[in-house]
Image 1: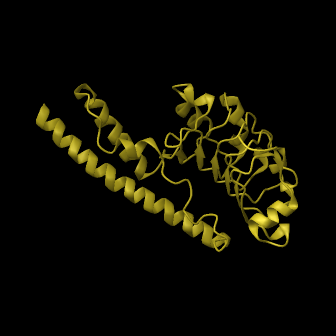
Image 2: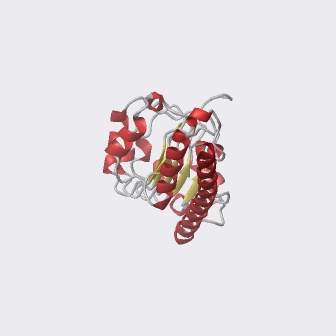
Image 3: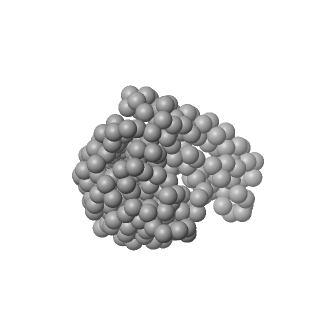
Length: 245
């Protein structure tokens, strides 16, 4: 990462960023783009439920092992090649690893014991973030086979009604490839939109119950919007296909 000398997380840094007096009171912490290379005493924030360490210089994750209350973890755009330390995060539901150095399926194997993990991101095309593993054309099927509990991978729903629309769209797109036209709405499928709601790291939004409700509402809104867009696009493609037969 560009910037001055590397930074190690300190108690004062965490208190300042969270505006909390006690480390035990910190439930949500954003340390994005702080030139952090060492996690320092981060493990003392045992009450943490949401943590953003994106766009730093982190390589080791051992200090996260004690944060068993973590539900959301953003590690995008670091230099992580090993996930050792994450296997103990029993409550983790949402994990962003886009833009790191993960090169093999074996590196992800430690996530298979996380029974609550539902949303995993290894690639974010809208931000140009990826991992070496994503160069393998079968990586999505390999990851979903190893982690069958996943509902969302790289922003695309793998299960539920939304996934059926994605599959329908892909089938229609395949049939229309011979026309060399870019399907309308394809740009919507390239990225996944915002990884979390815009007020996710707002200090006023620290209640665990409120966080769950806000996240559920955000996912519902995104799903409904995707369903609406894909339905319109699919209808248009069907009409075009019938007219050109």
